[in-house]
Amino acid sequence: MTKGRTRARQKRSASKIVLFVILGIVILLAGGYTYRSIYYTKHFLPKTEVNSVDISDLTIDEAKNALQKEYSSKVFTIQEEGKTWHEVKKSELGVSPNFTKELEILRQKQNPWGWAISYVSAAEKETLSSLDVDQEKLTASIATIKNNLVKLNESRTKSEDAKVIRTESGFSIQKETVGNSINIDEAIASITQTATEGKETIDLLDFRVKPTVTADDENLKKEIEKANKIAQVKATYTINGASFVIPTATIMEWIETKDSDISLNNEKLTAYVNELAAMYNTSSNPTKFTSTRRGEVSVPAGSYSWTIQVDQEAAALRDSIMAGEDFTRSPIVQGSTTADHALVGSTYIEVDLQNQHMWFYKDGALVLETDVVTGKPSSPTPAGVFYVWNHEQNATLRGLNDDGTKYASPVKYWMPIDWTGVGIHDSDWQPQYGGELWKTVGSHGCVNTPPGVMKQLYGAVENGTPVLVF
Image (cartoon, rainbow, N blue to C red):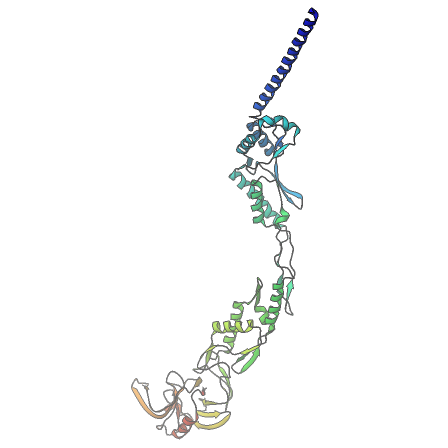
């Protein structure tokens, strides 16, 4: 009986010991887990990676130092077609990590009581991007890179757009050139942005300058068509009785192409019109004339003349050519007549000072002729191409004699031919005409005409009739 009780007591005592051991182990484990959990309130959980750096069991400061150490050894690589062209340490770019706040946030997100699970779960990988930029260092490094790119470009081929070119037979398309030069401004902007965003590489291939216009560009084809159409325009001028066509080669020299736009070089076109003016202006050039007795003579410019208005004519000529259609035109002029016909046609009055004789031709037929008396040596009749611009009967001609006294000469028929008071009129005070009377009894510059002939002339001549005095 006594042995049985003893065994029972021993069993109860052993059970208590086991219970206490188990309880102690549980308390020990719980304490250890709690201790470790408290540890992870200030440390990162196991298998934590940030930017590919293992920061397991590190404090925020330790993790920050580890990341900075790792970052300081990194380089920013500038490649071209996959090959390294230039490398620079990120620290030299003035770029450094500043992950303090992001690390604090990451630490707060982690559950310190779940540290044990971290050992059997997948690694927690985070990417942080807070960077500090030393602007002075960055500017200096970027300036160096830019200078190196400039030197690189010096040996590179520049890309060129396809364009319209002038040939002997017309205009054609010159194919584009695909070069390998770098758009430095775009590359530098991208390098600056990429480096300060924490990225590690960039490829210059992305910044090669490419042609923007190729040979198959539709606008370029239309430009060619328009240029050739303009170049082939038959531009005819009729000036002072002569007609000529502006050479195609000349028009081609004027044509300019830019940004799919066809235009004419205003400077060259204006120079051409200036040449026309110098050659044809009747206000400054003498007129070749086949006289009745003396053959071909050169008659100086006079009141019957015109001057090409260069700027207006250049603009009008440009518009005519750009229209792309054949045309015939006469220049815009200022003067007493226009340039679209010969200055002197088949109707005119001819005053031969040397022969002291006058003729009137109408439509090529002689209407009348007569001896005349022209200006005396002290007031000679001016030579020139003039015209009858008025008819007046019973006029009184006034002026000054050689001695300064005034004169007043009544005439029945008066036809002024210039703007200084010179004209053709009857002169009943002259007893004879022709010969060398002009030397002794010559006029004050007018053409003295026998009264009977003057009456016929007055009635036959219309205003606007050219008068050639030579």
